[in-house]
Image 1 (cartoon, rainbow, N blue to C red):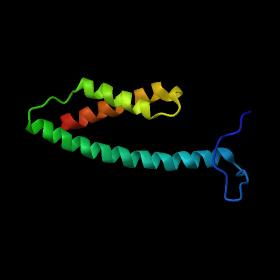
Image 2 (image 1 turned 45 degrees about the horizontal axis):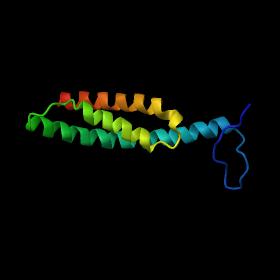
Image 3 (image 1 turned 135 degrees about the vertical axis):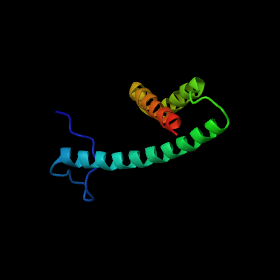
Image 4 (image 1 turned 120 degrees about the vertical axis):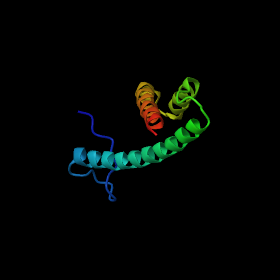
Length: 102
């Protein structure tokens, strides 16, 4: 079985339970992701207000394609491209719902 690629403790020793350590690291990353999503959604709401005031459509397909392409470009491991595309498609779908709801 392949060992988990996780951070070790300060002494360089492998933690006693690598799965629980890895899950704890994921929990911290999830907290950061949620914080960033909340910031993103706050900006989305401002954009939605601007679009509403200026009679602009919520949907901008070219912008969405560009966002996905740009985000995939940020990846160091391109094996994750499909996952990033799926995630950003969902994020933008939720963003459009937020824009429409206000």
